Image (spheres, rainbow, N blue to C red):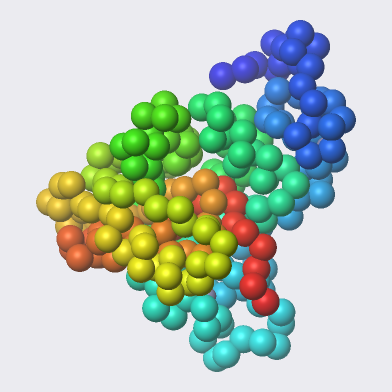
Length: 243
Ligand SMILES: [Zn+2]
Ligand SMILES: [Zn+2]
């Protein structure tokens, strides 16, 4: 943990360029983006007008009676929440986290702050969305595991990186691949290694970014098939919305 006396020294010793605007990052605690770029980033408070299941923003007046959008009806997770929109500083933070296993103070507080407003407090187990073995070896770490551990520190809820396995890695965002095709490709991509450990558990999945929801849905489907009572997902960011 970088303390407040060391931080200015480190910033002078290792000046970093903001990965969004190219200006200088004022503090190591901001991670890869400067204060202005964080200021421009939309941070979710949990009070937005959004789908009560997938968290997609919906312009007021376009809700049905259940406050649900029509995109996530068939998804297997119960509820999804994200800390920020996937743009500006949040996008830079997600990309930086794929390169370096380091959580800045800013990212840590965004994630734990969003947990506090998420309504996921009843979770009994935190599970990071796994990488395939091959990808994990290439990268050397799983960024979702770092986020899960930060949440474990914050909540005291145990984080278990070994209950879920990614058996295959597909190109999820291949151009021209529609939602159905993506779903088909991830459907059999996850397996529960230790079904006994997830039975009756209320699971909080954790990942860096939520895009279409197909990864979260595939994880939730296999966890529920093994007896999980509930599966919610919290991510650092989510991609801009379809509506
Ligand atoms: Zn900037
Ligand atoms: Zn929805």
